[in-house]
Length: 474
Image (cartoon, rainbow, N blue to C red; front, top):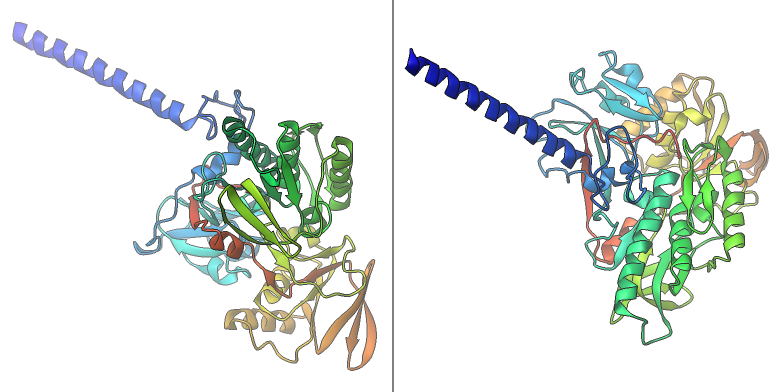
């Protein structure tokens, strides 16, 4: 009996020890899971921003996400994965999925429920932009991005990437990323002391959109020698913003300016705000300076433009993800209803849209728009046939034409764009067509070429259901 009681007591003590150990492990795991991806401070449950540095946790979701395995599909398909950098929220995948709730739109971005998905593959076939594939593992989204660390520094020391190019097309995140990157630059520049050569900047910032503006304002506030290079006019990224409406769900702190909150505004309204911030703070932006190369330099980097080279200790790339689009060179091309890409198809619902181009990107835009209820689409292409497109896109366009969802005008060229209309030359005659919006998809120079030439690694990140991002708000 005594032996039995001894064994029972030992078992009880062991059970308590194991329980305490497991509880401690859970606490440690919870603590690790709720730490800021930037400063490492603990974040209390229920908060979405770091109490120490004030940066939203969402800013670091892509940074902290694992790099995709090289053999992501090798283990056999088990569920759909959405390419978050391609998804345009058209809803075609949701409409064809035979499993209710397996794929849905959240914030104009498709989200997969791994428990409900049965890997039928209908969503893969239906996606007009090739933004879904089948894979195993925990990821429900993937995104191709430059490889960066918590301070948004790439694997090239001293070269930072912030904003949309880093995988998050959210204004709030872009503003925070620009500030965080230049805070790190300021810390290093202060430790090094002033550059001996007065022609060497502390930091060159490429781009004057939300991330670039925030980075420039932080450089100005920190007393750095800075230069902002913009290929177009001030905030060219916003001028070509591919969204119809812009909404920030909560205020964001702009360096030297204060709290900014944009509620259901047009890109023209946001552009006016951005210009006002630059004027109020005295921020300098060198416009008409397209950067063609970022190369190593004894003091850091040499940033080349068509006009001249610039030297800097550090470089912050705040480029748009879509690179430099090719333009038509016609009157009215800068009007606010002209877009060079689309990230939210639903925003064009019930509108008359003119798409210009004859490649895969143009046809993918067309087929995605035709899914939106009440949307009338016209495709203008100067060629006589779509010789350069993938067969799947050719088939989708043919199906849309047969269904009467798109009008195709071959051998046509845009001569002018007006508010609510466009002039097309067809067979030697100019015809005016009604167009609430004009989407120009005739190619361009993507930004990844510049990054790869500079030595930056481009990787594919996997996002789980918890980390899958939303683009509902800016």
